[in-house]
Length: 158
Image (cartoon, rainbow, N blue to C red):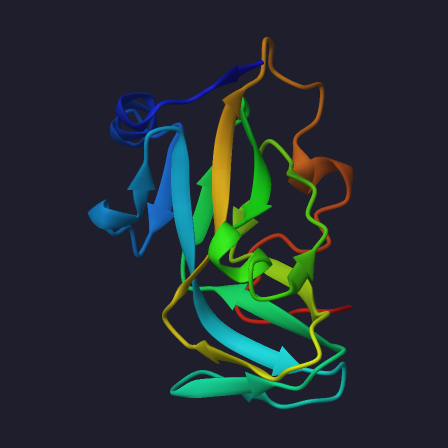
């Protein structure tokens, strides 16, 4: 696998191999793209908040939905990383890979592990997505394997 640079990300988008709806140039990094917060849900049964600031109490789980709707071709996958800005405030996340062929917004799970409330503004950058080329096309892309979250928009937990 090869990590895509900023110029390779632009090229993949121009060629239709990668799509980022709501793309913002300043969110492009040398080897990825910073995803922004569209919605936050505090607790599994909380309400989705899509404007203003959200206060996440100490030791509380929350979910973030990205503003960006991504669309991966069959040769593109990615890794997700929390921005260090949030890690330094005590926000912990465990992310995985985004499968080739996935399309939708991303729901990211996080925990305020600190002893203090953390204020998280809607629209703030939250995680970095690092795109990678697969060395060959998969036998079946995400939609053909499970596709449980294909086309999702907003926080989706089930």
